[in-house]
Length: 311
Length: 158
Image (cartoon, rainbow over all chains, first blue to last red; front, side, top):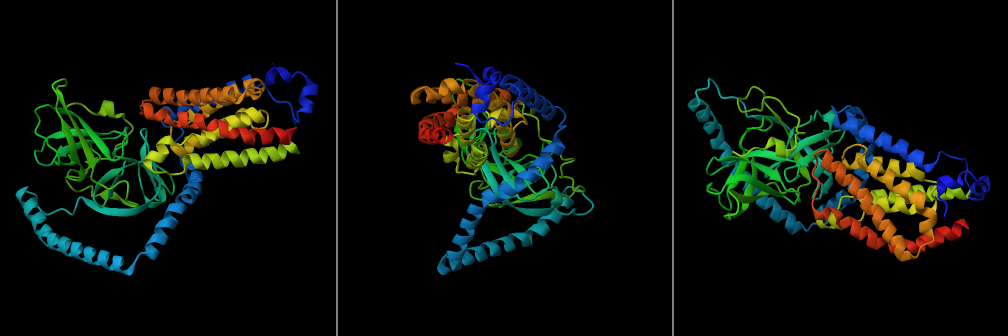
């Protein structure tokens, strides 16, 4: 049985098959395309020479992303519009109560902040470490074992930069990974390539939380057997790693297993931010004058295995 | 003129398969979603190896790379390889019984994922566990469903 390149020599066969023109043999074409693939792969891995190409292509992909996100957006809009009056009233009441709670807390907060800075011997109270934020809508979600990513509808035209912190109402969501003109790919905490330096809020012990690729699940693989950690402990950012200030909620410990076979405890945690339900996130900007602000925004391309060392 | 209608059908179905492959889905549905764009590319490479050709595989792969944010050229290489094998073997495979065709398609799907997996590993990305291969099995099981479509395409070209 002859294959494609062998028949290209027989013009009779070629004509009977409705072929508009003779082409290069398949083997040669494959060789050329494979060479192109390998060289763009190499260029992409080395020094990011293809960043501008990616930037452009991300802009091209944006309309398709918006179109694919529109059914979900339409569904949300319809549901909101048809929600019962009583439900809205209930929600309104709950939100009002929450607002009152926050107002009471905020009253004391200004005073505490001043006191805190006095205790730390600083001349004057600096402004809050996060001085600006921008709300973004999630337009695409990719959650699988290899990637836990969001695409949101803000990009460089809104001033987003690589490595920027992304939060939601309940806590840290992730960081800006690839920024296009109108859209940004956000790497979530649970992405298997993401690592975040954390601190156990109760004891102050510092460690690293790695993403697992499972929905909203983190693992803390570098804690010794005898370390003081239990279910329900809150994890907050430790401020190490130069990308995030300390104190943002990351997750809560969901399981602690200690067996004699390993010198390390096997700890898993659940991300605090409701990553599977939130449709709205926010980008943060930090006040560079604040002592707790990260010095510079570092790129986050280093693989987690290299970035994380046992405490 | 037959070629031009075939070409438009090829482009439209591949585009539709691509959209279905990248459409955001809940976690567990996405975990078993077959690689529809790859299946469409294999299908057209077996039916009309000279219309799409390796260019079809390369362009579809590049589109997947852009959309997925994977290493640039990763899927392009995988799909170019798959189309090359399909184009070389299309006369043999088209005359085989459905079961053998399915085995061939499964092998191609596996090959494309294996290339992606190796590149993920070599470039220091997460390579994933057994769940990565789940869509391949689902896709292989779906292949017999293309038989009817394949028959109509062959009739149209006769």
